Amino acid sequence: MYLTSEEIMQTIEMVRMENLDIRTITMGISLRDCSNPQNEIFCENIFEKIVKNGEKLVPVVDEVQDFYGIPIINKRISVTPISIVAESCKNPDFVEIAKTMDEAAKEINVDFIGGFSALVQKGLTNGDKRFISSIPESLASTEKVCSSVNVAGTKSGINMDAVSEMGKIIKKTAELTKNKDGIGCAKLVIFANAPEDNPFMAGAFHGVGEAECVINAGVSGPGVVNSALRRLFNPTLGEISEEIKKTSFKITRMGEMAAREVSKRLGVEFGVVDISLAPTPAVGDSVAEILEAMGLEKCGAHGTTAALALLNDAVKKGGLMASSSVGGLSGAFIPVSEDAGMIRAVECGALSIEKLEAMTSVCSVGLDMIAVPGDTPASTISGIIADEMAIGVINNKTTAARLIPVPGKKQGDLVEFGGLLGGGPIMSVSSFSSEEFIKRGGRIPAPVNSLTN
Image 1: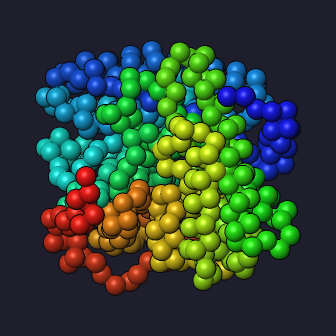
Image 2 (image 1 turned 90 degrees about the vertical axis):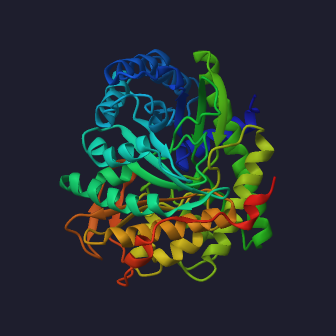
């Protein structure tokens, strides 16, 4: 793939003035051949496999960044879901496994490692149960490890036993990391219909249907789209959609070009480019500001869900025109703490969890990086997760929840996580109980559209 001289100049302008970057290059590594009945040998195997495959990732990505002059913010690793590859261990010590992953990530100097994960959308094995119970301590005792649990799917329905348990796990994780405002929960995401090739944390894992080792890229660019829309004079919504498509096309071409170069230099198979608009706390690098550029006074006003649907659809159309390797989540993220415009909308009362939930029916992921009061009951957290899973299951799309009950904080207080995780106000949740509903357990059956085959 080659860029024209005009496209190169446009890209330089996007990088300089509009916060364009490649958010992540993520190497996916299969650990299926690392299984061993002995926990110690298993840990040795995964450490060796991760380091052997990933030792050149960071220097090569840095070389490509310098070669093209395009910022590549994060270098990451994703691995086969640990609950699967550790199942054969006689007595797996999942906390020790997490620490091994953390040590491997530090050894090769990547920013995060994902795949401390489980797929339990239809039921839990004994190994899954032990794995899930280990998540709080594992996240509290590591720095770079990210965890995800897929609890629902359109073909399987919603595993409410897992949903109930994840509410408790989130609460415990927050408590074990309370000295950092429950930041362990920022490394834990609960999915419906989780994709196997997602390069973004905390939900990245290397799916069992993937190749031995692949390179996936996650491209950002809300600042570029925002600037493009604000240059238009009194556009119609159709003209806005066309401008987003053209901008997404350019962003995707740039991202795939860089990712394929990394892939070639490493001698590793190229996977996908995820064209999700991933915001940062930086002013101007905001999905909320894109929605406001369409004519909304504030993100959260009536019409926000329609505007987000337009944005998500146009981003995907532009990306698909630019590449046949678009994958992952691809669309628009709406993480509250990571988006300066979202934070302002919450602070002025324009945006609530209920409105965010409606928006997740048309965005590319779900309720993301939402800080809630520390005394929120586990059953209420499970209820929020269940609602989000239902949106994904019924609409046959990926949805997720990354919720942070911040110990000692109440509605309206401020929290600061730092870096790309940002910060913001503690959002309110319903004071009415979900406990009896969550206690019923079992499985919400798959919808009728699951029978499509």
